[in-house]
Image (cartoon, rainbow, N blue to C red):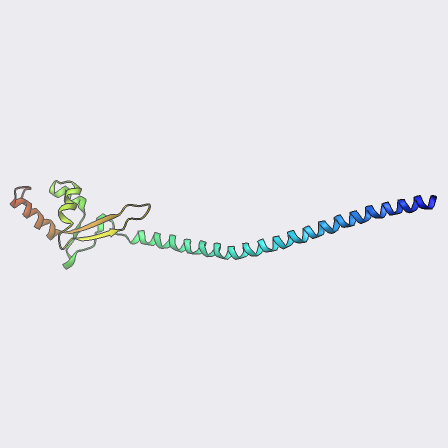
Amino acid sequence: MNTIKETVQRIAEASQRIAAIQALIDARTALEHTNVQIGLIDEALAAHQGRIDLLHTVSGMLMQEAASASKRAPSPDSLPPAAGDERSRSVKSVAQQLGMSTDLVRELFSQEPDVVAVSRPETRDKRSYTTLYIPESAVRRIQSRLAAKGKVKPSSR
């Protein structure tokens, strides 16, 4: 009888060991599966890291280009000369000289043949904008036209 009890006890202990071993096998399988997933994630991250590095490089280049472009952009005080090396004027300075609003000056001069219009197109976030470079000859021509109609005083220049 003792032997049967001992055998049953040994079988119970063996069953517990088998259950513990099965639990370890299940844990190891889950760990291997997790390691495989981690490996796949690492590969995906490595692939994306290359793209992220490229994006950082490109954005840095674009920012440098934008900075250098803003340095190259003409200021109202240094407008480029018009045809024939004639000095150009800003809309604001012509408006002050003629005693008109900048809107009226833009309207009057936008269709003149020797006025240079530089436009920036409208984007989703920014409105369009046009800069006018008005040569002195165009100012004299419009001023004399308006003086003939009695709209402004004749030029004293």
